[in-house]
Image (cartoon, rainbow, N blue to C red):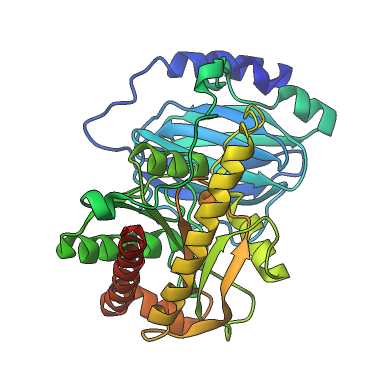
Length: 410
């Protein structure tokens, strides 16, 4: 905790003490309000609570963020966000980071130091309060102080030569669809502390994608032809790399990631389907991929310790084959979905989405529509509309594996 800097030395000692308290409770503590005040020399951020909670605070750079880890909390009564920027705080997000661990992330406009962080007991007509005092600082000072606490820093493990995937083969054109049940991964975008896009009515993308994923799983399960796995089946954050890793761990034959978007113009609507390409098909696709690839930053992850992926010729070949299969599936998917909903122009698009980069799994990302369009948001909130989309997706998946079966016959 020394990374909070000299100004927070006393706070660090307090944090160390409170973190010794168990985070397990009979019922989740609740956040009853969120407030922020600009006092000129400092900015104070306050969470109103119904009981005292332990916490851990650290800062991350590029972009500037303050991250607060807390026990799992009930945020139901809390405000959705700031109405406007206050001091250096541009906005904040909160939600479940992993089971038992909530996370609060404050986006900062500039380098800012955590001067104090503490919990106030009830008094003067107020209940328990978590208080964060922020003051301006230099970038150099921020960089010296920022980073994960020592107990959260991932320790790099040496990779033995045998573990490097030099034996990777091309994607199996004879998947479980031929040998038995094909494995399909459905990936509801965003979750937990990362809400994704926010619709005109305040609906979160993470809720729409999870509802759609469950609908699609039910449709595929009812066919009896597939083993279907969701990357997440609750409102929890999942890092992009973990979504891909989960697909590879279960030997997925197909990966379908579900998303929805927002844009400034409320008149824009329509579903689109993306497949992987390092060269985006247009500027809009490039911007969308850049936004989605920042999901880990949004959730307050420190990516500075990530080592680059091992690459070789076989991985490249495998990815090319997977991209060809993905594109073929996407083309059919566009036709089927077009029978059930409005499509965006140039419906099949290409971009460098991190979540599509499993080299040996055909993958598509479906943008279900625009939550910034009132009509489309209403449709995506309706179960009957999601059921129609699930039926179209199921028909396309059926056809995709049927084509593979035909291609595998001698």
